[in-house]
Length: 210
Ligand code: ADP
Ligand code: C5P
Ligand code: MG
Image 1 (cartoon, rainbow, N blue to C red):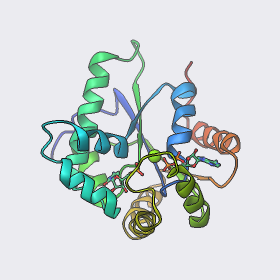
Image 2 (image 1 turned 45 degrees about the vertical axis):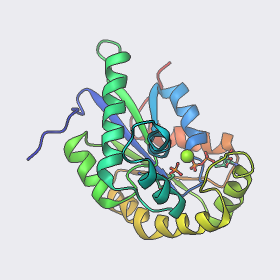
Image 3 (image 1 turned 120 degrees about the horizontal axis):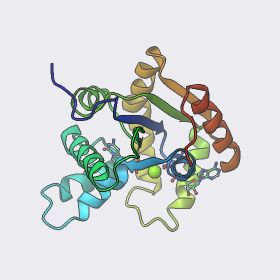
Image 4 (image 1 turned 30 degrees about the vertical axis):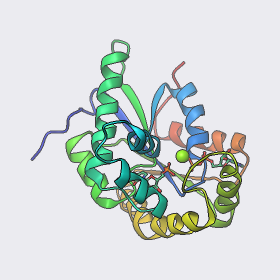
């Protein structure tokens, strides 16, 4: 048995899942404000690593992202684990409170979920944004007009949806069996989604922090 790097006694981890374009990044901003989460987006961390000078993974990450495939988990888990350690050392939680991490877009594959929970920290809750593909597609094509992302184009979007259905939904189903999932309807206005998200996580005992 390995001991995770962080204990759930000190750290609360919430995984934030949902298809590409379901609104995870958008909703994360609200959750940071209301609940005192540190937001860590696996995709953002991978994109930063892709362009970091001296990274040995730049080309690999670029190829995987354009193809909508899941980057080998060792890379992503190390980025997340190091970002958590960095946050805990630079802004430790107030005495008597736990640090809260909202881990956006991760785990996207079953092996990542198992490896993270065994070696980094077990999760408390999984927030899942449920959104029809047609809505996500419209949003992503629109986002692609300004995002500068290599994967916000029709061909990559199709591949990302395929990966989501085949590889990432089984992660949600696995957590659902463990009764860890809060599902929120995401094809509503950002404000309505935000209200549902808050109600969902408060029902699980996670309370706001100002
Ligand atoms: P994700 O991080 O899940 O891929 P984003 O938060 O980046 O999704 O949202 C994808 C796009 O859809 C963004 O351009 C965002 O502004 C827009 N968007 C997010 N939530 C909503 C919503 N509830 N209604 C309409 N557009 C939204
Ligand atoms: O979450 P986001 O849409 O920013 O992710 C963009 C891409 O980053 C994914 O399509 C995938 O190629 C890669 N990624 C990954 N593993 C994760 C999260 C993202 O490989 N856990
Ligand atoms: Mg995002």
